Amino acid sequence: MQINEVRELNDVELHRELDDQQRGLMNLRFRKATMQLTNTNELATTRKTIARIKTVIRERQITANLEAPTATIGDKGE
Image (cartoon, rainbow, N blue to C red; front, side, top):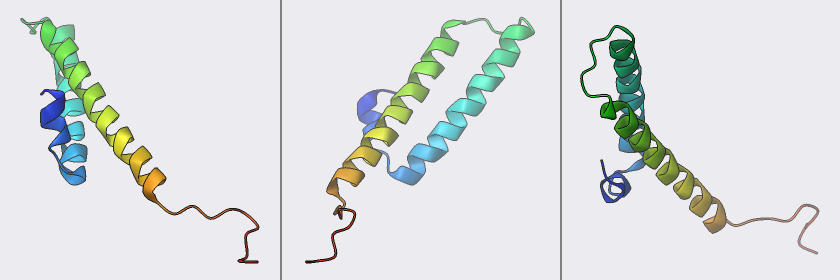
């Protein structure tokens, strides 16, 4: 999954995809441990996809915090 595909997903789909990818990574690790994994590049690809998803989630959190109105502590409208 490329970064532009990840950015097209909404927040619910992002978290669902993150769960799916993490579950898939766990299955790949089990397959590697039992010598059933033929393509070891799948591990790296899955890890990179997880990193892309986490990056987009964090970007959205940061932009949401920047767009939210911030009130200063002790500011009572004086």
